[in-house]
Image (cartoon, rainbow, N blue to C red; front, side, top):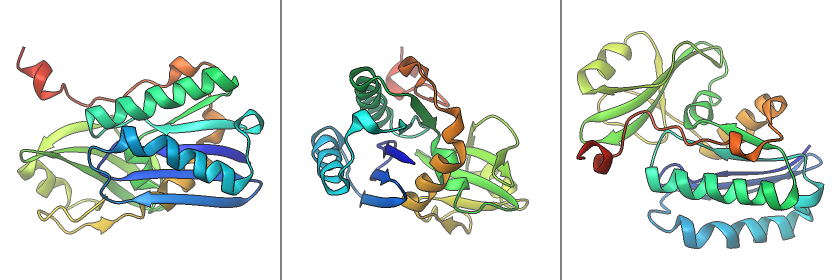
Length: 202
């Protein structure tokens, strides 16, 4: 398998290149607002290290959200441009998949801190989503945590949770879902569980 995968949906930046079974990884757990500056130099570095030319890749994968509105846009637009340029299939992975694939068995609640006391969540059973992602508040998260193992990118401070390995979760999700890659780059659509603050204020 040969692919490039990127995740700019949160504070972290994850880039993975796999070339015939050999995996090259980059992870920054606090990329902050630097995704637009850091992403392409990291991509070029890993492609050079791996010896993979994108024209030979099977597909290019991107995490489409939920998460940071700005980060999601950066990742999706970058991957769509690369898919157009190299005529490659595009694989969309959700942030919830990245979290859930850290625990492949049992009932898991993938949870993302949305700020201001809110959380984006999606329940899984054996890596299969049980429902559509939703936005919930603190008390709802506490109630749900009684029935699931909560998996998050970092400690949430509200309920006990398993802190995911975002790189390994991305690799596992990509490998499991590689058959879903689409020949249409426009199939990569940002996943916004709720409107941005700017849109809600209109």
